[in-house]
Length: 384
Ligand code: PLP
Image 1 (tube, rainbow, N blue to C red):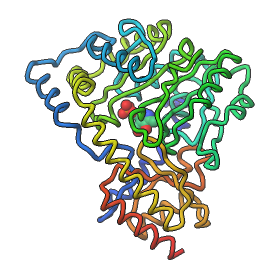
Image 2: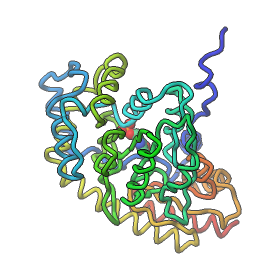
Image 3: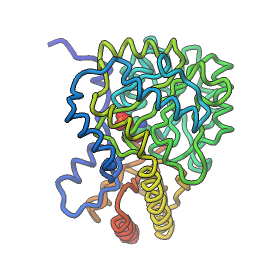
Image 4: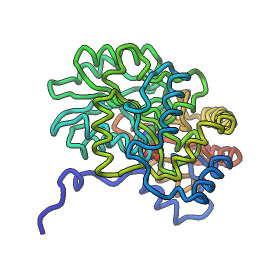
């Protein structure tokens, strides 16, 4: 048989899945490994989905998605962030940010072009660059800088083949929210080297210590930036598979072109539910964010009390403590913690080389379980 696609064959399986598989076979596991809300989708959003089914909204929608949903997304970007996109030509409804990311990279890249990706970063970023024919170039961020993007280090990594920079803020796995000054510097760098920017803002509503800045609203960014957002995290809608992409017309049109030949449209029922999410579920989101914040405070305090240094996670729902004091690699730490104390965390190394020395813990987990996880982790550290 002829060999299958080289790039995909060379891509290792997700390092997160491996831990899920071990944990699934064990009893009494407290999982801090999953990057997904532990809330069920708010009832009013589910009810809108039921209504859509009852009324037979079971067809395709237009390729770009429901006009009402695109209008709401663009109004929301404009009112919350002062970022302005035309709903009818600069916004596309996608099957989650995952599809938006894939579309953006496929549209931006020619084979062999490089995309700079500050890491540690979401596990899909670098594979998606490769699948789109590009070459990912990781640039480290550091816990000492609260994982702020090091714009000088990015500039040093620019080559004649560099085409784009891909960032996520608030970030998975670090919880870092990029300060507006860093975003401004990043845009100036993109202007100097004529680079595109892709900004994954799926956690935009999940911030606790300050506010999020939409990259599309930073002066100079709009014409070279693709903003990705969705409903999976803040509205607890991971399984509905709905998100969006906002970009200047020339880019958005090409994204629609790929999407119309590949995905056709995001699920109709989910789009109707997403309309409800934006029209009436703000109160539900606020309540969930307040709950995450309570857990975040208790959990981070607990980690620090058992001797793990933990940079303040300002957004998303992850803590990324250092485990260097244990003398173990992040992979060994996660494996031994799971076997000894039945607590599942993700080794920082799966998010890039600069994630080594850390573990990712999701605090989208009930408070009593978080407290118990801290107790078990403390016992584990004592046993080393
Ligand atoms: N981007 C980041 C940073 C994520 O953490 C995730 C999911 O964990 C996604 C994108 C995937 O989002 P969606 O469910 O909208 O495809």
